[in-house]
Length: 432
Image (cartoon, rainbow, N blue to C red; front, top):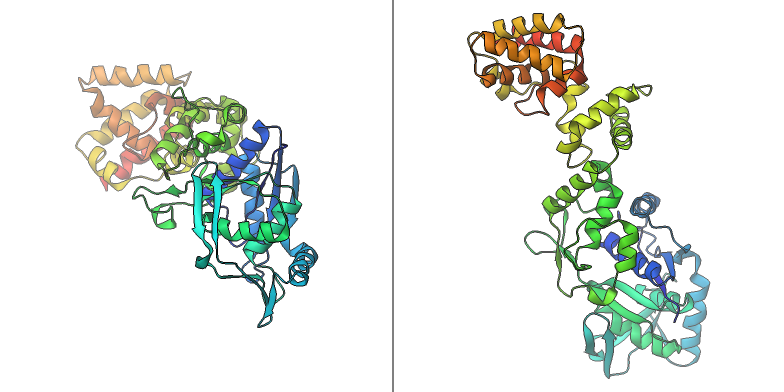
């Protein structure tokens, strides 16, 4: 049997993390079996459908590296097909008109279907005595359009969230009534938050766009979502997309809900960032900084690579360059009041900063090694503990109590800015 799967989002909201994982599992399954991945847009809810959400879904899939083999197909453009099949049911006496709609009276019986993950599931049709096929506005209901589309598109496997389990018996009776062959069903567990409730906005970001904008790398995000509810064995954690495709086995997806752990995602993304070639990382960071107006379009690429090398091991997400390392791009840097109070407003600090400023200004070569030698020479001559000068200088240059290695920061900032900031800290900040 040739594998044909579909991902069928509704453009009534942004691409949810759970939907993204469903799309990925379909994609992995199709590519593993050299099958076909179809994108279908279920846009019959005209009141709630929005072109902006469609753009968000498309951008999200592109971010995940998913390119449909067929589609997108829009249900709103397939109304004639639904009308054709509802007429078949009406002519066969299986459906009736009722209050402007077309409904399907469901015979009272037991319906059993086999789910690839959950096994046999049995439901009494008394739970849904009638099914609306076409609403009074002439648009099909979800269950009817879904059955017609899956059958006509030759879908072999319906892989979707287990919140759709309740829909499956309703769809089975429609498959039978229309004389369609059944696909294989696999309902994958939902993603839950830390409190084990369904992932929602109150627990943090839920849309793929938010993670993309925060600067999570696509390969890291795909890697993380793939391992939510499935594992390849061998305790492997860092896996590129092609390896995920090769090893993916739908039958080994866990039946229980998968917990979204932001700390684990941050760790994984940090690992990918550490492995990113410095020139590529510099480009990714520069794109964010130019968009923010902190870096000119004709920026010095060599210097930006020095920045990338300096911060690479400290980044969890790309937006950390703005949140934690803005001092490299802003003049003066944003000073943290607590750090200034703790390290700059002490007796003798201003004089030490000015003395270091003078020594550094005389250096012919200004790199991490020479600035360290000059700074430690002053520490030794004044019989100071290293922290008595290092900590104030760090705050003077970065505005923060914590930063990348101080002498690496000096080298990246350059002599002019280091001297200027030491003077500013000594004459303005240390005395206010």
